[in-house]
Image (cartoon, rainbow, N blue to C red; front, side, top):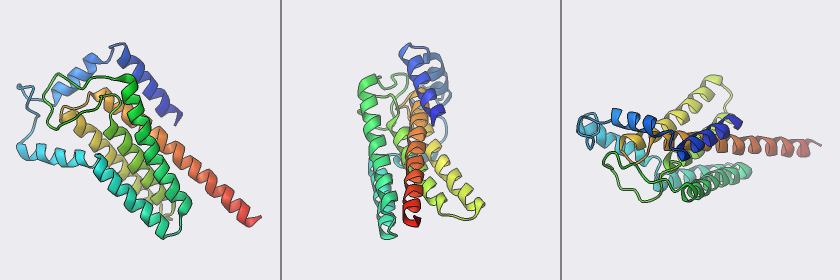
Length: 210
């Protein structure tokens, strides 16, 4: 958690000083053909990336959150349900607040393949998807007994988060450092919330056994 927060602050500091422009430009242009408005790959791949990026959109994340919270309530895990809702809502609020604070313009180097309206830093898709999928993954893995199942759940959550972030750069709507910062802070936030949930669960268990 501390590493994620430190990494976010380091990226934010470098970005504010203009030191990330070279890195951002090189990575973004690597995802373009000679025509900077044309992403590399066939048309079907671009459509697939648009579908992937939708996994980090507010509509999908809200639906995933409601389904997960509903499941936790149905299984009488009320504390976990509250924690999950607070983690995702808090992550979104933090993301939007930081966007307004940094007010970094969206990339102007290439054409945007999808419509965007908010500021660029940090990437809301990267940050909130990390907070959502990593937290859900951690809660699901916690109740599994087999290590292989736990690993599968964690790896799946991480891969979904990574794909969503990369899709934002590919589609030209975020600088790479926007996404890196979003991943770092979203993961740190998720770890904080999951750690808090574990602490409350141990306290509740100790109280019931006393």
